[in-house]
Length: 135
Image (cartoon, rainbow, N blue to C red; front, side, top):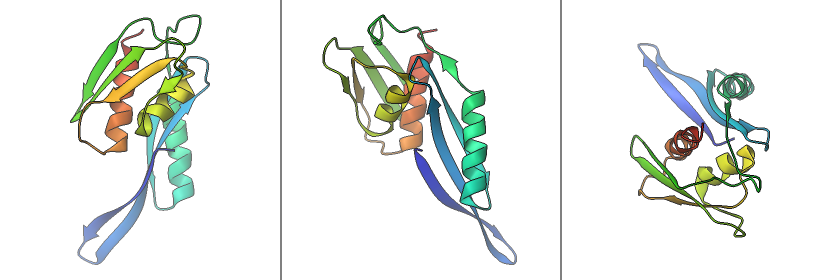
């Protein structure tokens, strides 16, 4: 789970609150997906987000040692991510990028977020966009 956020819709009668949940789902064998769900309660939002994440699964072409074959970079809104193969170093990443790569089953990668953006959802989306280039 990357993010749980309470969002408000302002109406004439006052504020109506909903929950938005962002989840990363993966099998740690080269498949990963991201999903968002909104609902009046957190349990419903988590269920919807997980269902959406399973629908959005992408298959990655990883090397024999579960790394990436070449350097990747991607930009999503204001987030910019680079992924480099790093044999024997393990998974070196931060924030939600580490969650996405871990659930994808990627092992020897050096990841760098090259922006000041602290938005976890955008960083995760940028990482997924970079991994989609492996198809």
